[in-house]
Image (cartoon, rainbow, N blue to C red; front, side, top):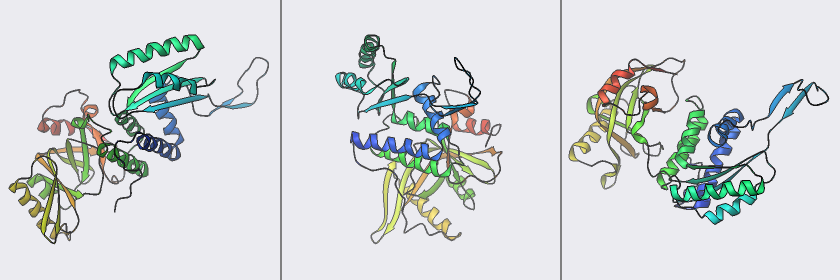
Length: 337
């Protein structure tokens, strides 16, 4: 049974905020360096150094001490909503939460970016407030997905524990509607395929236990022997499990057809040859339009643990992805670590 790190309640702002703060605290406990790098990247835009700084012989007005240990003061205030509409009067009251911190950031967090007209009104009032009270409060409007993506940028595939936490957070966000407009179109999820690789490629199907969460992605890449060997664009996701009443199916995406039922049955039969009995455990079956051969090599030692999600727009250095066959050809010229 999958362990969940985050509470599952529907459309409750306090739970959404608590889960996001838990995610950030887990990142802090995992790596203070990566946490502070995330803060600078997302909240402060490299305008401050919130982490502890160690200096030798730092000169002041009248002396040069042997060493100093300092940390710039900062405060982040967060207001969470389930829509892109915020109460401006409430935000203005929140500004009184700041004291004499050197760096002050007001975060508005929601599934979608703030309404532009409302944002302009609030930021105009914020400028007037800053001028009147001699403050320098910054406003950052962001989404749950943006925060998750920024953390993904800070960790790598060897940060196994933090990857698991982030995956569970993303699963929570998808299930509770906190990520409403996904950028799944540009992501490829790498999945390990060993003895079943030939079957997966020939039948255009891949399966995994249904209790394993994942971030939304339109492509899957099959990994075998230090390389992603095939890539396909997902056209359906269907869960299946055998019960006393027979096979039961649930459609997560796409359409349940007789052909896909047969392919699920074929996958179960193929699994028997390798000692897998898929029937009594609910599995999620990914169907792709077609798998195209590729050779996206991993150049660092050791096989990856679990899965990894790649942003194809970054790898291919483009804002618009070509067709899947072309992606497969380009990946042959790329590597990853």
